[in-house]
Amino acid sequence: MNNNSKVLKTVFLSIMVAIGVVISPILRVEGMAPTAHLINVVCSVFLGPWYSLLCATLIGIIRMIFMGIPPLALTGAVFGAFLSGVLYRASKGKLIFAVIGEIIGTGVIGAIVSYPVMTYLVGRDGLTAFFYVPMFITATIMGGSVAYVFLIALKKNGMLAKIQDRLGGKIYEGSRTFNKEATGYQK
Image (cartoon, rainbow, N blue to C red; front, side, top):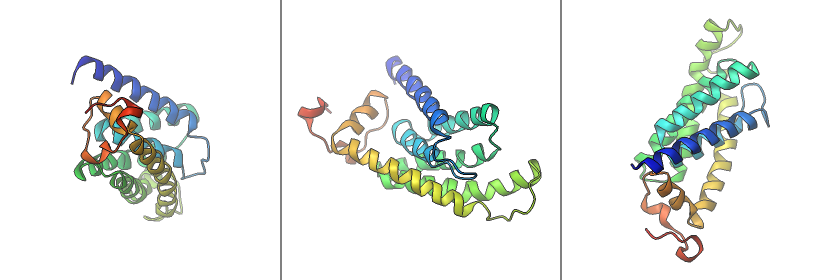
C-alpha cells in the first residue's frame, strides 16, 4: 500500500466517522440506529473489517461522550461492523454477505452482548437476554438494505471498484461490472 492510499484511507475513515456521528440522531429510536448500520456496511466494503471496526468504535465513543447515548452505541455497532467486513472478504466480494455480517454481528451478537452490559454496568432492570434482538435486527435490516442498494448502484456504474482501488483495497471480480468509458477505470 502506497502512502497516497494510506492518506486516502485515513481521510475516508474520518469522513465516515463524521457522517456517522452527524446522521446518527436521524431516524433513531432507543435501541435502533439504522444509519449506523448503513455506515458499517459501506465502510466494511470500502476499507475492510479492521477499519470498519475502528469507524464503529470511534462513532460509538463520540456519541456516548457528546450525545449521552448509553453503551448500546458500542455494543450495537462494533460486532456487526467487523463481521460485515470479514464476511465480505470471505465471500470474495459478495455485497449481500456484508449485509448478512452486519445483521448477524449486530442484530444477534451485539444484541445479546448488550443485555449484560446494560443490566450489570448501566443498572437497567427488566431486561432479558434477547430484549434487544428484535430492535437491533430491524435496524440492521433497514440500514443494511439502504447500504446494499447504494453499493449495487456503485457497482453497476463501475465506481465501487474504482473507489476500492483508490483506497488501496482488494477489488473482487464481481466488483468489476462497469462501463470503462463512463468511469475511466482501466483495471
